[in-house]
Amino acid sequence: MADKDEVNKMLEDLLESFKEKVKESDKLKERLQDFERQIALHFEDDGHYFFTLSDGEVSKIKEGKTKSADIIITTDSTTLKALISGDMKAMEAYARKKVRVDAPFMDLLKIKDMF
Image (cartoon, rainbow, N blue to C red):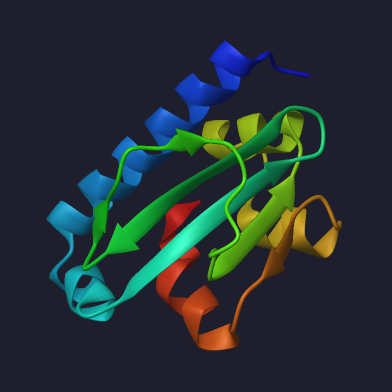
């Protein structure tokens, strides 16, 4: 289990990596054009965070709960660490029920490159 500082760092690294993917991929930029969603991350072992994804741009991560999330991702800090390090793929985590995502299917397709 990671502590709050480690989780914050992992989330910042994850979103920074996603920003780079968007910069490098015209296809991804096009897919995220006119797409704005608030994304909540609920960690079973370390709290709640949220951020906004708008036209491929990611806002600063905020700690706490939000009632207006369009996409809710629930996991634990160990799984997040495995996803970021590449030790576990997103589909594997989802199939093993290590990650739960509450979102419309089309939204999932748009954010699939985040992990």
